[in-house]
Amino acid sequence: MTSHLPAPLQIRELFGDLLGREVTLSPSAPLAPGPAMPATIASYVDDVLQLRALVVCDLPLSAYAGAAIGLVPQGQAEDAITDGALTDPLAENLYEVLNIAASLFNVDGAAHVKLHAMAPAGGPMDPQLMARALTLGRREDLAVSINGYGDGRLSIVLV
Image 1 (cartoon, one colour):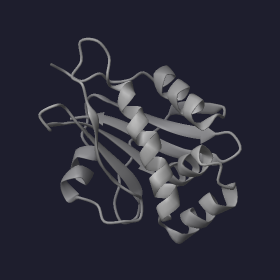
Image 2 (cartoon, rainbow, N blue to C red):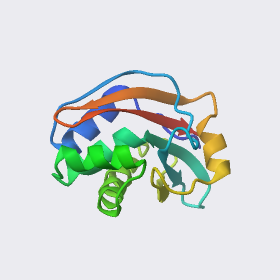
Image 3 (cartoon, rainbow, N blue to C red):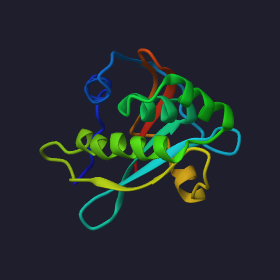
């Protein structure tokens, strides 16, 4: 059974509904997480714990989404971006966003997935997940703008 690659419209609607703000998307280059590009990597597994998908958010999107869902002032997200890492509260808020984002993959006829783990931007990253984030093929690469907060990038990668 294959995994479902969500369409940009589904992604925009989920983020907009979760964050309670207008969210706009546009095509973007694939994210390449690494030391020069801190990113959050969320891994999604099926019922037998096989890795099925990754959601990768650059540091700005990680901070803005974590702030927006928790109604945290934009300045705290900006501070995290300047510091190069998410604060614990922003990471916890982002975890909630990415946990609910599992619903993007769970459609009829596709493998059921759930959030397995999240490595927040600015922390240690699993080299295997970083390499998988660069996988070409079934993926969506998007620039995301959260009204009232700011812009970042998102990649959804099926593995």
